[in-house]
Image 1 (cartoon, helix red, strand yellow):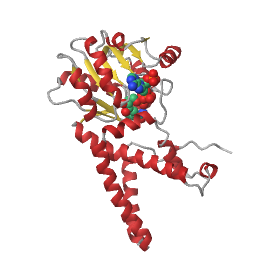
Image 2 (cartoon, rainbow, N blue to C red):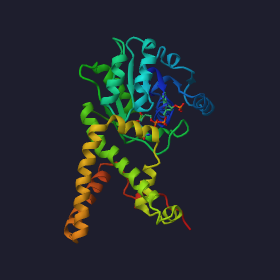
Image 3 (cartoon, protein in one colour):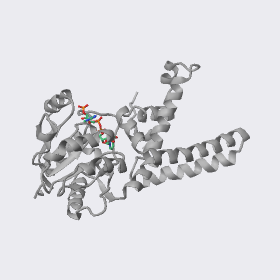
Length: 308
Ligand code: NAP
């Protein structure tokens, strides 16, 4: 027997990787009776209509949120405030607004002041993504076995939180609740600083005139190749992440720099024991991630090998 939908009508604002994956997952699992979507550009709305993304694609934010029980803000973090201001007068009383932004404190500060009394706000962050973006990049399995963190401000209606939890669990995620500042610090360690380091490494390789571009590409080994995948992530999204999670990211980068100096020193002084101990510790962390089901143990990070 199929379960009833969690929401009657869901509005997706922004139709990129995350929103399109949510649509396909909601549709597969029957989690919403109707999904209405809109995006800033006519080109994205046109693509969405062409590929059947959303039950209805409309041309404006007020049209999209009218009558919606759940409104999902799936735009870059820096655009959330303006979108919230535009939609606020058109929200249905008793509805829930959520977002999927990668930073939480800044989104709460940008969105909450615009929301009328009687509308619930339950910020969220699915810890799932790829380096691709846009309406064609989504797929239903993106959130399967991934965490989704809910960050409800104190005093949020527990029923609104429970319903959003049911939606994310229905899409295959494990859900946990967390305070916004803690979220931003955890993500600075696990995602934001690593992305910045990847961007830097690829930038350094690009700057090295002794190594020509073609050599960088031709001889790209696993380490560099993995950096380039991360460094191919959407520039707007990541610009906004660093501008809005400034303190936590700078804190972690400060620690990173200290560790880097310590490793530099160990290399210079030939302190092999230090290097070996350090790499043994990091290897154990990798094992922990695999045991927690957050990555595959397949060789070469699970890349499919083509037979020759
Ligand atoms: P995306 O594929 O680049 O799509 C972004 C969408 O936002 C597009 O529909 C775009 O419209 C719209 N948009 C961009 N700038 C806008 C603006 N100034 N005003 C209104 N709409 C605007 O992005 P995404 O990867 O789905 O990311 C969406 C959100 O999810 C971000 O807040 C991001 O931090 C978060 N997130 C991303 C990942 C990830 O790995 N990608 C993971 C977790 C959370 P047009 O197409 O018309 O330009």
